[in-house]
Length: 508
Ligand code: HEM
Image (tube, rainbow, N blue to C red; front, top):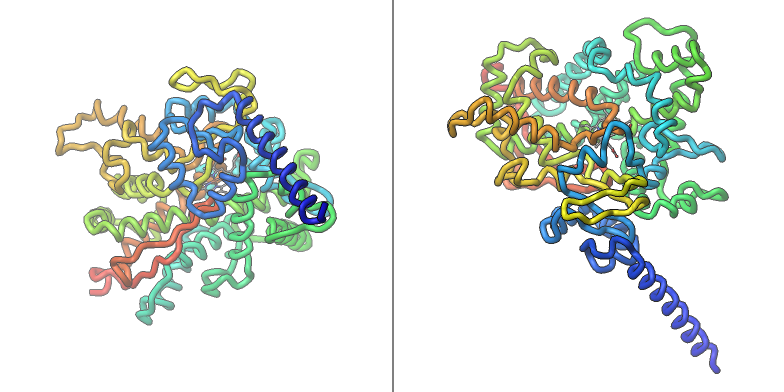
């Protein structure tokens, strides 16, 4: 027998074994009756390639449109879009634990794996890590930091004036929103901006590293076992940069602050707070825990907020009626500068625009994966999803539910968040409708693993959007232009080129 034919025979045998294994997995699967793409039933490669292609949130919208409330996205993965199950899957007890997807977000320093509050799968670890730091993320604590955000907003307006208003150059608002959001996080965490607005570019390469790390997280997270052999390879890490460089940056900040001795003067920041906990109770917080806590601010705090800010600007500029109404509300509100959170959050139309932007373009665009506990999960048609199955909801799918958000759920319409007086909607009708929409809002997740930094984003978003629309007239360079979107867990947008001028009333 020639070498070639024995090679072909061996290959044939291998393919037969692999096919038999796929078939066996399929036949034995307790969720084989849940519909979904053919190949997804056999292999996780289907969802890997779907995420790799960059728009999995659209695929999932289409699949749920076709198949209904439950869609199989992998041999043991089911995407759920039934809002009635939201509080079951994401409850405050944390009965449904996070899946291994999140472990890809762990960092490896030397041979040590460092978990963080986002990546840990353990409820116990999570509670212990969250307990000492939670207070820093409450709105009451953050409001004490409002002067730091004011400072960053003033710097933002100054830089917009210098770079674009005074020169007439095109503003790449997608980039500047990111620079702003990073500088806010830098202020709140390390009491200094990260320097992106000053430089007007990704001066340290941190932004592109974060992008690549997220591309890796999203795709490899579909087959998380691969991470052990790639970024966390025990012999030699392979592939794109992991989150390690950000961890090293955080470790440097700790070292610098400790070298500087006692708390330096000025507004205390989060790092001061974390170091204080370490000093008082070293058994509760060591240096690794501080790195982990700083890291989530850096990795989760800027991109997400920038995505929301971009969505607000983009959809408002695309809808002249909304734009006009927003500017009228701001113009009539007798606001101080930069606009205070108290004043901005009391403006109903601004609130509606923010909520609607987050609804149509949630910052996170993959399943918030959870493991079905021993009790199983009963779907509305009576199907029982067995323990151990990975289930998850995606805000991009839930937010399109017509029964919750109305027949025009696919359109951008901030008015849905307000009482429809013209159609005779009474306050008694409006309040339950509003409560129903809020209950199905997955923008910041839900349950015991709800977003830790929600208040940071809300605080800076209301303030900066109010200040921006109060001070500037903005228009697209090309009114027909559509932004580009890439879903790597965070659903990032680019290509928002705008002209920006001082508002006419402010110029006169
Ligand atoms: C508009 C801005 C933001 C959006 C849309 C957003 C979205 C989310 C979502 C959907 C989750 C849930 C993930 C899951 O269940 O799998 C989450 C969790 C988390 N977010 Fe945010 N986030 C935002 C801003 C922030 C900020 C500013 C920070 C920190 C400074 C932050 C830190 C975190 C952390 C630590 C978690 C994990 C919480 C846990 O597992 O207990 N986020 N975020």
